[in-house]
Image (cartoon, rainbow, N blue to C red; front, side):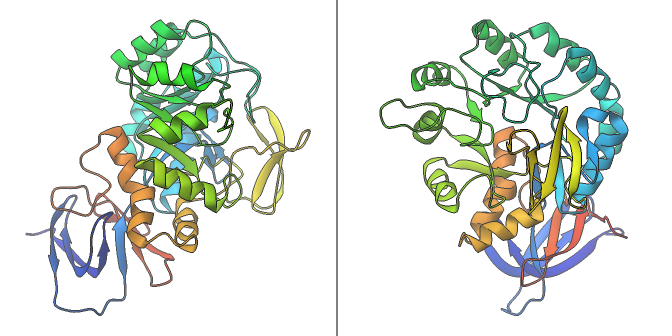
Length: 363
């Protein structure tokens, strides 16, 4: 075939590892095992990040140019599928930020859709979100759907008026996630019996796993199929990540990265808050609250390996499970017919090359 390319290395999916060749153009044509244990490269599926606010100085809420800028920044760190994520804001500002989204999505192959984090969250569990929460409004979402592909929304299930709202979201095939919430276990269980529910940055900004008063974390660990989790060595302990992996078969890593990712230490603005970046974290200056993260997915992958997850488990957590959650059947694996979205790592798991639909991005 005229445009067929080949790369050789240790090919790792979530459930298999072998030394072999990948033949590809835009899509993977075939993989072929070779009779050797020698390899220089490790080849893994491109990372899938379903919760990312920004990076490289760009914030998704600053509009289409910023969304393109952040997506390119994270693509350079191996994220071949990204979900730019908003934060709680007024409708007009959210609409303006997403106004040209459908155009830029066509032109940028690693952009999947939009994750709305709020504004239908609990004002008493804001985290770093501004206090601009609203009661559930399907009109808010429908108007945004006219201009942008809303794929995920983070909500607090205990808020008044949520019942009909959730029904409408489900009818629009929008994934529902619990986050920034103080719901109790019973509230969660009731909704989880009707809908497939995910969990936003598990453990963070949600009621916990108290042994007498079980909350959202309890519901996730006992009944959840999918949940996202930040693996930056700051937001969640290694032990808690391992517990979550044991309990939730579809656990997947996200960055929750903000505009300050990739910038030098100093003071910045995020979600209408003055923040300070230092010691690999970002915090609101006024109260010390964590304000998202500055981690990238290639660093996340290495963090998982350092936690003694196997390379196959690290692939599962950084690409495969997220693709399964979204129901996208052509990403998250290196296999015939899948998009040629894959990464080349060296033997120390450092990122060497990024391929997006068969094109090396740094060429």
